[in-house]
Amino acid sequence: MELWQANAAGKYIHEMDDHVAPLDPNFTGQGRLVTDEDGRYQVFTIKPGAYPVLYSGWWWRPPHIHFSIVGSSWMNRFVTQIFFPGEPLNEKDLLLNAVPDKDVRERLIFEYTDTVMGDFSYIGYRRDFVLRGHRRTPEIA
Amino acid sequence: MRQVVSPGSTTGPYFPREFSDGSEDLTRREAHTARGQHLLLTGRVLELGAKPTWNMVLEIWQPDANGIFRHPLDARATEADPGFWGWGRARTAQDGWYRFKTVLPGTYGGRSPHINCAVLGIGLTRRLLTTIFFSDAPDAARDPVLDCVSDPALRRRLFAQRDPSLDEAGLPAYRFDIILRGEGETPFFVD
Image 1 (cartoon, rainbow over the protein chains, first blue to last red):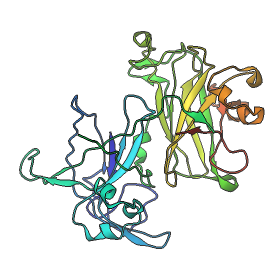
Image 2 (image 1 turned 180 degrees about the vertical axis):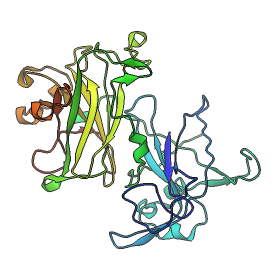
Image 3 (image 1 turned 90 degrees about the vertical axis):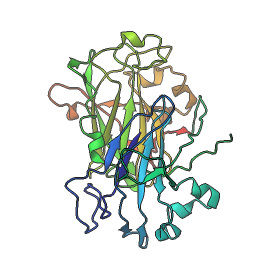
Image 4 (image 1 turned 45 degrees about the horizontal axis):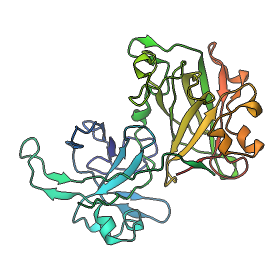
């Protein structure tokens, strides 16, 4: 699993990010991990900030974390982004709301969990991923 | 309990470039150097109107020079080349060029020598998959995946071309341009 996100000010370490917000010298915004034998993952991070998108019209992206998941072979690649519950900007985000069905959108939002990770200084959020199966013999167009 | 599929999305523009650091070179693993013919696999990723794409992420995977994948499903995995990891990632520069250092893949199970390639990036809602073949005689090559493409002109687009003008430090260069859309479009797998 690979994940990446903006820092608390809504800025990525990336040459294409021209948002005026500052970089955080103590935060890379990226991580990698392998799920355990029960399929569980656990990440310690900070809540990302919102940032403006300045093309295709403009709007503020709500806080979100990008995930890229690779299965037992590199064929099983899955990419998505997960949002935080109760964020007013969620209602306006063009990407989250590109998913028309509200129940499906819910699967892109973390759930608060009172499971304690590490010490009590971390808020717990949970999101399970369900990966699509794929046909073993693809066709070529 | 019924499980419902998670919705996917694009990588967006900010896929960390550090995730690609060092992974353009597949010819080294731990303290070992890969066996076989080392080569440079390079080319451009172009969109409609032959416009170069910047910041596209390319991932390749392939067997070693003896045709063995470092993967539990390969019956010969224990004999895999200790110097070859078999997976790499590169990003296109502003002018659309990418570059991998790898080895000429070996053959296995009736396949022609080939490298699998995935393209991810902003604007691509699904990752694109194609296969890059290597042959001195493309029209004579036989391969079950290649044979899914019947038009000879389309088949030729799936072959990397030897291009001595791109050779570097004794490494023979093979050029493979990926055209996402428009004239000369690369054949991709249908997901």
